[in-house]
Length: 529
Image 1 (tube, rainbow, N blue to C red):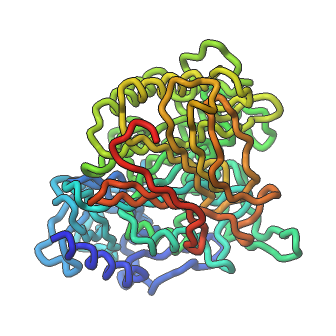
Image 2: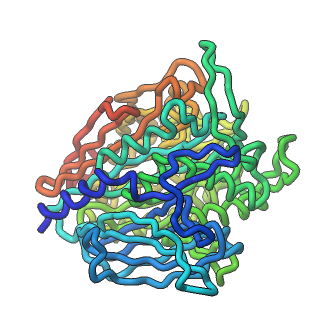
């Protein structure tokens, strides 16, 4: 029964510290290390475990080994693992940086799933390391079951990494305590272009102290350096504990490769010896697919190469579909954004058509469009170019705005209900309401866009608004100065609660510490509101 499932999860949350493996930092410092593994010399999962793209009947379990190993997953409806089901996984080796995933299928809907990952010596299956365990809930198949999730982005940016003196990545502990069904990671999951110093002087004379590893000494260029950036974040105990208890839906943005990148770009940055962004993006994409369990990024033939795509729909029961966009892979070059014809735009023609088709087919009450960049906030790239969509011209759509106008028109005329836009990227939190009565382009229905982040990165002042789609900034919290450190606050995440009884969606913007800054309740079944 539904009322019996939730306490089972909370019981796991209370004991969560025992669920995750250890992480050893290159400097010799151990961050949040549990007792040493009893079976020395056997495969160990020191980076914990995580689950991705959970649906009513499936999920994808991830782990990394410290040496070659066979991955095996056991699942059970209880913590005792009595009558556990066993799922034989891949051999983990150098080709995937010893990472691997196991797809779980045929799971019961709306149920708590307990799992443990076993790593066995590939030459002697009897020699297995200490298991790592976790839990997640499958999506409900009944409309009356509530759904709660959190979202944010921007992790370890602008020189601010794991700082044990402030408690590490505090946002993940706060989000875990909210007991969400899943986490939408809205991009900038690493800062491959952001080296970390061991200490940084703060304006008031204090010192911010980073945990450091060799892969964070310089910008990432090689596959090994990109992989090291993803491993770095998993040194944080808060993140490992969170991953063991909350499944994720992950997308990427620019800093997984390099700042403000676009296909075909040649870098003019003295820090790089490899200046082809296409080469860097291939390496980054491989590491990204190795370190996150993403259902549409599959490994090719065990050789560590990714196929598939980042954009996808994750269907989370009758109440919710999440449309995960990729605003990087198919975009055109950054420019002033004043073209009168721009078929490529920020999504590319094929992805735009895919999004239209999937929105039209969706029967979910709510359709969350997970965008890795905002619509009406002006995000510049240098002195004259535009990095996002809005081009700082308040008139009719031009450049990438043309593609967004086409999509918004489609949503209105097809009478697609329940669309809400969630994003991160700009390193503050805000709520924008878009309305045609305020806009230069008027052929769309009103909608909301909510922004949250960073998780642990520099915070920045609010961006200017572009009036093309008529945004009104209903709420904002941002610092007045640039690159405020996580030690000084301005770290944010958002929460979405969908009530199974009424169908109402309540979006809350929270800061680290858990306090609600702003909340808005939206009504189901409407085209625009």
